[in-house]
Image (cartoon, rainbow, N blue to C red; front, side, top):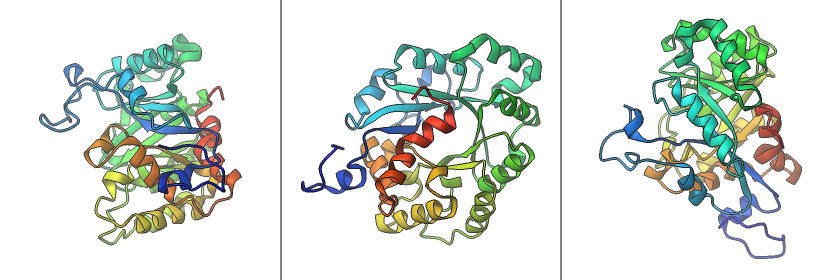
Length: 296
């Protein structure tokens, strides 16, 4: 359990990393039903089942985790945006905001995308995501919508197999009014190998103030790496960008192939151990409110 505890009380590992923090916003969770699409989900895997809003509630480690950001899961059609919106509206106690898939709205062009945002009003997405092997592999039709995100005050989120931090820095430089969130620390290689150019790309991203990095995906991404070494990777990111440009996410239910949502959050939080209580609170809660424009 992740419980708020006083400093004088004995705590286990997870409690030590989250204690004295009043609330945590988990900035990366998914919901899906393979019957509705999601062709990437392999039959027979732990992910090949419906994960619904009640499952999200049941996965919550404890009362310190008070909200989550729903992130699209590549269903493959524009209807996923409306499904995310419906979950957000039906369970505001669990869902603080949502991030849609920019790819599936590209073919409609800027005018139709602006109309969608206008029609959704206060229930519009908090951001939109681009994913692919690299920036070059994401559709040009979706790139055309990036200025619309900047104009609307929505986040651009990137999940790229390589070069995500560099691509984020380039997009953020071209659009200084746009906040660019990089998922999963920019997907560095497993630390059993040399991260190579990832460190260079991190320095480039750190030089652009409107790039934010999400500390997420570590349980699967860094499988087999000693937890303290993974924590060192997180400390490096936090040191490069500063605690005000970092978010925390579990990547549930993707993480279930390696552990629970609580296990994933614990690993993400290990590298925050050298922050002050105020800095840790910003990384775990306040930054999410600011970056995604949440209601508090």
